[in-house]
Image 1 (cartoon, rainbow, N blue to C red):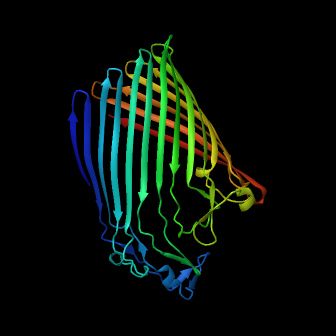
Image 2 (cartoon, one colour):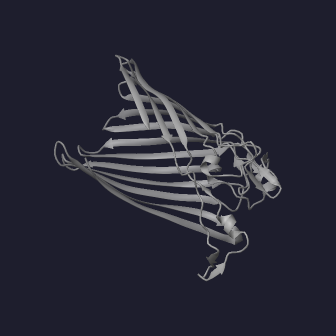
Image 3 (tube, rainbow, N blue to C red):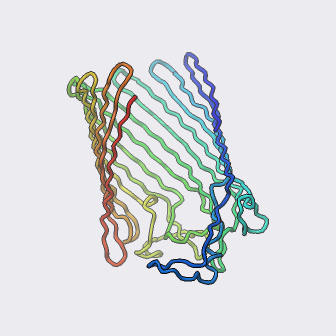
Length: 381
């Protein structure tokens, strides 16, 4: 890895620019398993391997190939006036992977194709403006743009029966914006109201790739969220925050796999794909509500404790009876920080949570899947 940075600081403008490079090389391009002529069956009984079995499961398995990554970035801040300031970040990166298949010990690529010729370009642009037009009011506006542009060569690597299909490119373009206002009321109360949006554009799906295994996909999803927060210093040592957020996600029309390769537009998913179609929850229409409680207690000059509780609910609207219909989640966390001396402090945390997925399954089954987590950590600085 290679990293280089340069900094500039003026009275109003501050800049930091740099280069980051990653170069990976693997002398072992593949592994070829040795398969004996006798294999054990399901109950451990040794039997002769069937015709062709050794050759089939003894094919080489590719390991991580040589690849490179380059990134240039520029971050900075600018003070327009004592009440208006901003910060920004620009970055551009390029990932390549073009190791020769022959060098990796792999054969059987399409005629005239010697490597993946993989290339993905990454772009990031972000700007945030913070203003304090009056003494007790602060405003924040933010916009962030990211783009993952896949420029890998399209090659017919795959074939099932008489159907031949290519790899597919993975594009992801994300626009995110946020507007937030915070006002300091009497009695040590601080209120915050905000709104944000996120739009994800996956570009045009590769028309020569196969998308079997899923009933439908979406090129674009859009999500908007509004939220309210109230913070108050209840005593000199205890402060609290209560927040509520509500978000709604929808998207473009669904696209269904064609009869071999590519996708076709679907006007009425329920009528055209049936009630037992399978959709990805990350692309489905969803309504989310979330409630957050946060308490901070400075017990002594040396000891600080923070308690957090998050509870929420997701409700999905998908044109099928077999999918995730709703989800409940909660997370409870305790953080502790203790100052041992001017130079040393100790910190720790413990959190527990649960997510429950309500999903309808074929055959009339209804599944309530509980996923429970427990995390703990301790640190010394």
